[in-house]
Length: 125
Image (cartoon, rainbow, N blue to C red; front, top):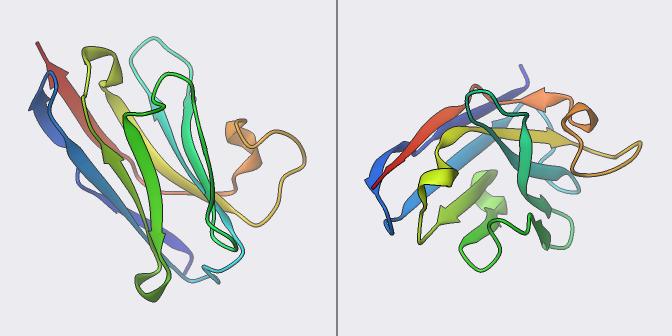
């Protein structure tokens, strides 16, 4: 079946780092859009970073630019989110999502048809 298996969340102190992993199975990894979204309590889902696996094009939300890095390993069908210099406002459930094409914006959650289960990231002061 189609799956995105997410791991790597946890609790860190301000300024710390985490690396999230998302392993894809059940669909072709190449030439897909994969992205990380996050949602904190009381807030809407927010797009964090996007990668197109066909050419390694990457896109970032302004709030995480220069701190987060999205990357892929085609041999492992895996996308990563390296998170450095973490802040309290980064605390959220992080979701790995995927789809082959967009009807509109890559930052709209409804564009992605395949969703992982989410992993919690908590950043303390």
